[in-house]
Image (cartoon, one colour):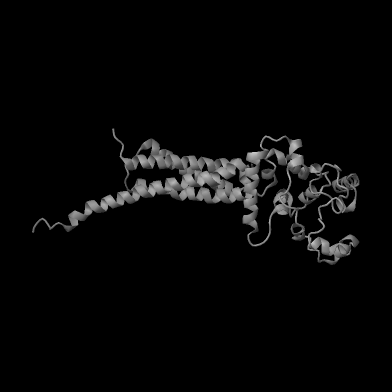
Length: 80
Length: 235
């Protein structure tokens, strides 16, 4: 079965977010230079990317819904 | 670390855990991408991770101020151990026993002050990490003691954040009075062998002990006095 690109992107976003969260948890449980620096840099980047990917999917979905709705609103009523 | 005593750490763990439950649920259950799923994902990818990041960043920032953080690089172990040593007469250790410094005595003494002090201190800290990763990671402790040094001489301004050099009690000391201008102009270091002793005497080639230690006494004498004080307090 072919997975739609939006679903694939969302799954990727979830995995990125899980990695970012695990880095943040690591820095809290072991507050030494490497975990803290990695969480504050790589963790933030991965977390931001995952949120951006989610927003891209949502916006694309909204745009598609809008485009699908547009022709029906312009079409004349069935009785005419 | 004691999570219970760190509310921000607890918030980070809770937010991360809840976000992980939502995200793993989405990956495993594979629900259709309807409105409810999007709201759950907004919470799992946005709200909880942002909460975890915010709390985790503040907690991480606080952690960078702690002596345990500084002492986690092996080249800083002697400095941190000396501060932990209750019998040590070094400046660093004596300040560590002060509640205003405590477990953050490295940061309080070595932080830059002023408007951008915190930012400059953190940038300096990043430089330390870079230097450690590139130059000192595999250096032996004995070698590190000889080679690691401050980028610039320790400024008296940092001492003067607490010891203002203005109070009558401070000025009553003859040595302070006679060297007042030199101290304020940074021409004489408070933390020198001839004044209050080195902050980290174990890093100095000789003498191993500070010439003058607590209250102008030699280090062994200072330790004896400290032992006496502790035994009195213990009774």
